[in-house]
Length: 452
Image: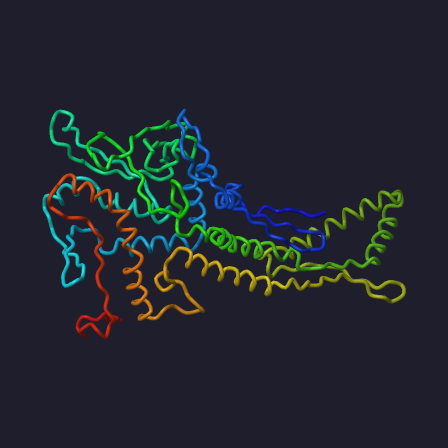
């Protein structure tokens, strides 16, 4: 009879009667794999969800896409590091005030220090806000935040934005608009959607009015980069690589199972029939009052006991070096009867090589799907790391082609706040990136040196 053994919460091994073993992967949360497939193949924005009496646009097939993607990415050995590297490459050496200028047909940024704006930025944790928005953007291609006005405007003082607050994407949803137009969304709802909002309830924020920033004391906004043919929420760049991320994450689990349990199927034990016939004869001789049924029951017990000892010795990596003892005897005809333990060729080398090929394919698919050059991802290609010149050109290409759109989307709200609070200054925040030069272009005294 076939046996199914549980490896992890989402991975199983099926052992068949003929000694073969099949691994089945489904990951944590049971239905996560099928949900990812369903989310990728259906339009989950077409039907409203009702929570706490409010109709919302579901975020994913089960209205929990941010948490699902978090679990998928965190379970992979490669994806979190790539996202962290993307965050570092985008953030650069920090975020500073600057002004655009046009010089001989070229656009340049002039980095400027402004004490008044900087005091306002320092009055709240603006760098943590920006980094949190970057993280959500890299995971989801969009993020939520709240805009808080100073309370003084309620008593006649000029309106002034006090601070911006990042709202984790797993806790925010767009209200359902009957027009199915993102511009017509009137409210953003905030709560613990991962757990059905049972403990937190819902907070309702009006959507930030860009034409009239002082319209609401507290408002919220969803900022994103449009995803093709998506009405409301965007999907991340690695959306098409999700299947590879899931499959790549399961390979180490399968290897661990093979290491711990694969030896169980590696041996065939041959017990000579003459051995058991001799046992039966001895049992009849010792226990003359036993009938055949009683003798067979004892033979079954001895057989199970003997096999359990064999399995204990032969199974698992922790039993390497143990030995087992068996009897050999010669019958009346002079024939030797002995136990044989034969190793079965499980083609483990072929199995390992096939899994490693899948792992290599998943690395390539994940890296390309997440949009970061392998050289910048610290990924080995064809068994080698990138050279210094490859890293340099990959970095320059990344700065020229992969930072401007995310920068605009992430810094747009805080730059709108600067423009509202400090009109006429014509200053904006931007990510500062030092220009890299090849070592031969650097003077000898300024080159990086290895100190032994």
